[in-house]
Amino acid sequence: MIKFKSCLLYLLVFIFFLSSISYGQPITNAQIVTEKQTEFTGNLLKFKVLCEGSNMQYKWSILKDSCVIYTKDYSESNMFEYPVTSEGIYYVGVSIKDVEGNIVTCESQKVSVVDKIKIETPKVEVEPTKVKTAEEIEIENVQAYVNETKKLTSQTDRLIWVDTAKNMVYIFKGKSKEWQLEKKMVCTDGKDSTPTIKGDFSVKSRAPWLISYSGKVRAKYKVNFYGNYYFHSILFNSKGTRVVDSRLGKSLSHGCIRLSVEDAKWIYDYIPDKTAVHIS
Image 1 (cartoon, rainbow, N blue to C red):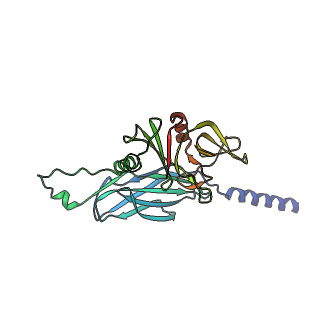
Image 2: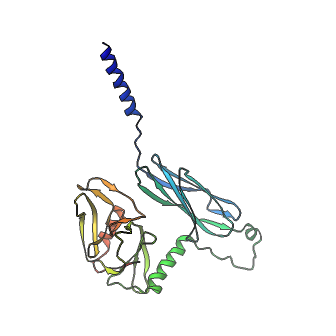
Image 3: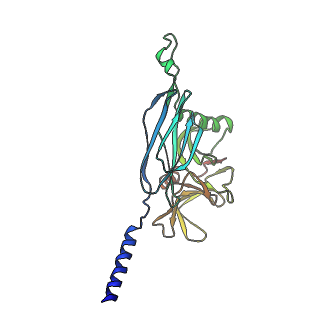
């Protein structure tokens, strides 16, 4: 009878231990809430990230006119405040990391910061200057890079620029000196020990799957642009049934350009062979 009671006690303790284990939930539905879309100099910009998940940490960066002006390292705070002292277009980006190292990124809406004195005492005779949004400035900059700085050409009506410094892929449509930005995609490029090749290349072939040399992982929608370098999706297990590495916006691949499944499929479907690929 004593043995039975002891075994029962051990069983109850074991069940309690199992029930106390917490498993991390994946990060989903991430978005940033912006308190205001217009603010005055001297005030605080306030942002809050909303998402589903557990045991998450947040790394905040604030940008003014598309340039990073301050970055706060990872912390448990899902709120961010920043005092603004000058006019401009501001917005924040946040990297959300769970206990397994998976990272999801998102950006806030743009906030226009203006001088209160200028608003209160406008000069009627002067036309107010239109303030460009951060998105408009970014589009102007990337189009100037491919059209004026690099004067890039392509054998098709599409052009791809991979900016490894920003972990971004830009897709253009048009022709030489008249390229217009069509899409932009967050990517993961090669790590320091296996960097992504730099230079000018072109799309050569494609296939539904890319299988790793070890056979342990695979990726969807591979599009080759040079040697063993491809655009492809985030990584799946060996059977292609489950995502095993969804990290984007990093430099950690073996040299290929990883994209979300949706973005990889878009390139697979819409970018023809012989399309120019510029990597910097």
